[in-house]
Each structure stands twice: as C-alpha cells, then as structure tokens.
Amino acid sequence: MVLEAVAEAVEAGARRQRACEVVGLDRRTEQRWRKQGGGVDRRAGRQSSPPNKLSEAERAELIETANSTEFRNLSPKQIVPKLADQGVYLASEATFFRVLRQEKLLSHRGRTRPRRYKRPEEFVATGPCQVWSWDITYLRSAMRGCFYYLYLIEDVWSRMIVGYEVHACESMDLSAALIASTCATMGVDRAGLVLHSDNGGPMKGSTMLATLQRLGVVPSFSRPRVSDDNAYCESLFRTLKYRPDFPREPFQSLEHARLWVERFVHWYNTEHLHSGIQYVTPYDRHLGLDVEILAMRHELYQQARKKQPERWTRNTRNWAAVGHVRLNPRTAIRNQNIGQSVRSLSTTTSGHAVCGI
Image 1: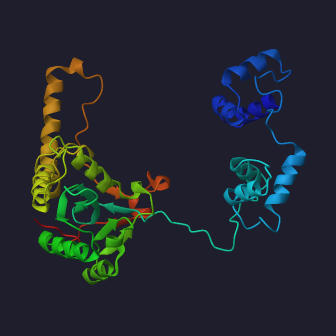
Image 2 (image 1 turned 180 degrees about the vertical axis):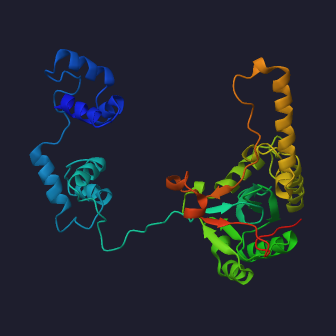
C-alpha cells in the first residue's frame, strides 16, 4: 500500500523524496522495497507495549474520575493531590493531561474563561521616530535591596537612544514626563508615533495612558512574561550591563548612576557599530549618514575584488542599508509585501513622524 501510494504521487508530479517523507518512509527504504517487489514491513520499531502503560480498566477509571462531579471542574494539578489526600493514586499529572488530551477532554475545566493574550500588532518602521520601544531596568545601589531605575527610550529603526533618565523609584508620572520631554526634544510630530513597552505599572498607569492620548502617540504592549515582544530594549539592556566598564560594584549614589549612564548613551549612540544596522552607529543611521558610509564600504570591496579576484568565489559582502525594521513580526507574513499585511509607518511630506535632533 505504501509503495502504491508513493508511485501514485510520483505519477501525479510529486518528487519521490517528498512523497516518501509524507508517508514517513526513508528514500532508501522505498528503493529497497521496490527492488524486493513489496513484502512485509520490516522497519525497526516497538514490537510490544511499554510495561508502564495504563491498562484499559485503569484508563477508563482515570477518565471516569476526571469527569466525576467532584473533579470535573478541576485541573489535573488539583485532582492528583486531592486523590492523594484520599489515599488514592491513579496516575501522575502528566498522564492525566495526556489521556484527557487524547480523549479531547482537555478543554478549560471550570466556569471562568481562560485568559488569552493576542500577539501584539506588527509595526514596520521605514524611518526614524516612527516606532519607539521603551522599558525600565534595575541598577544596583549601595543599599542592599534598593535599586536605581533607568528609564530608556530606543528608536526601533535607527536603534538610537532618543530619551533616558535615571530615578530612585518607578513611577507612571516620571514615565509620562520622560515621553513628553523626549517628543519635544526630538521635534517629533507625534501623530502616528508608536510607543511599545511591556505591561508594567509605569507603562500602563492612568497618567501615562492619558499623556499618550494627549500627545497622539499610539500605545503598544507586550504579552505578559514574553520578553521577545520587547526584544529591542532587552537586547540594549544586555549590551549596557555587559559593557567592560559597567561597575562590578553597586552604584554609590544616584548621581554616580546618572553619570555612568550618560557616558554609556554617548558611546552607544555615536561609537557603537550596531550589528542590526550593518555595523554603523545609531547616530549615523538616525541622520541618514549610513547610506554614504555603506556605499563607501561597498566601493572599497569592489576595488579589492578587482585587485585580487581569486580571493572571492562569490559576490562581495552585502553592505546594503537596512530598509525597514519590524516590531513584533508575524512569521506567517514575513515574506509578503509589507504594504498588504502590516501597518506601515512612512515619512510623508505632511510632517507625520518627522524627527529632528
């Protein structure tokens, strides 16, 4: 039957290798079977049931118990301990979950609706000051258990730190003030600016949300406990805390922390060659100077290839500037036209999302 199915697929135009993969057969095994003219399936595999497998009676008892009036609204994580208190052991939590899943009985057990979090909307930045990402990170203080807090805003397209402050506490009022002052300092036409963050109190507080609404800034939030939804800031904080000059000892004062962060921001914006933007500085990228820099690198490589063509078997390194940057990209549409499936934020002559320094 397997050989006939593969042959039928090949006759219909499918590749034999792909047809074998679909039926779970190795290509060489299919070749050997065809030479043998069929026969018995002699592929290696389990010939007997595992010794710890539940019997049919045990499986039926497990299902009956899980669906009983006493336990039908409880998760297996609750059922197993309650049974243990009664001196009964049927199976582990994992076995309960597996059997209920196989029987399609693993729907939400209880009257409450399960909380579901949608993936954040995808935004595409094609220029500076269209999409910002911001977060707060801890900086150790000299007092054990107390911290200073670095509020930091990063432009997703250029990776430039456009705003930051260090405070002794977390506060939605301080967050709102930072956003407002950064918009004013950068000269942003706030209509259409997206500000992405996680779900912390300073990010979703009433004062912060009211400020964003007043400024015309579109808020975007990560899912709870999903750090990848705010990966740009998380990556930047890792760069910050793994700098060779990052203090091994706690910051002795708030002024000490502010001074160090100021030096870091200057280094990061004007000296750091960022891997995500073709190894140019965020400052050059933000001002559009990266195009000329990358063009010079490309020309240098072309000249080097003309002098010693034997050193290159293929094209030279790609020094093309990064065109657009995605925030929270959706894998399913990664290769589609961004104008058809995502909200594209583009710089226009009407002044939307124009940013200056």
